[in-house]
Image (cartoon, rainbow, N blue to C red; front, side, top):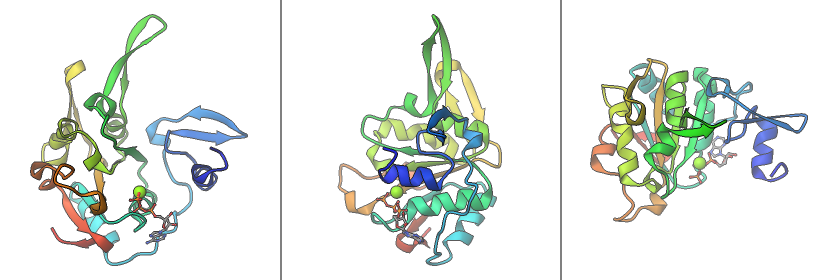
Length: 207
Ligand SMILES: Nc1ncnc2c1ncn2[C@@H]1O[C@H](COP(=O)(O)OP(=O)(O)OP(=O)(O)O)[C@@H](O)[C@H]1O
Ligand SMILES: [Mg+2]
């Protein structure tokens, strides 16, 4: 993996997408607040997408990026993470992704049951940017956990620990959506879609 595409990213970025930092070929696990880009990820602005994202961020609005593969959605998020100086937590969604994968779960460690935050809860606690890549791939019952975070409540319900996690103004939620994969079966729920500032190809704001 070191010499694959992810390897190239690793050499360019301080962390890979699993939250690991490679230092003299030793891997250690990072906390989300360490997921910063030290150097500017190169991003060539296409339209006024940077200003739109910054305005959404200032107003604590979540953002939906819609565009075909390779149009720069991931690079744009890396660039905005660097620009806003917030850590970026990326989750690649798939059809087995459960709410617990996002929020967290109890794990047994040294004979004891301990709570471990999932990437979404960790990003909320760290006041970072949580980027849910290819969100239509996730099960619909999974995507509803982001609903209270994506509207004016800005809270994450952690049912298993009976905790309501309130997002600070620094937290930002962004999701992406590739229209190439779009089918009747794989579309965003209307109730999910309507919560987001919507950006299509080239990130022109459509509302
Ligand atoms: N506006 C841009 N500025 C700079 N580089 C770009 C831009 N758009 C695309 N690229 C280049 O194209 C590559 C692919 O872009 P990226 O991975 O961000 O696409 P994507 O929209 O996330 O695709 P996918 O939907 O397949 O995940 C980037 O690694 C980058 O080299
Ligand atoms: Mg991508």
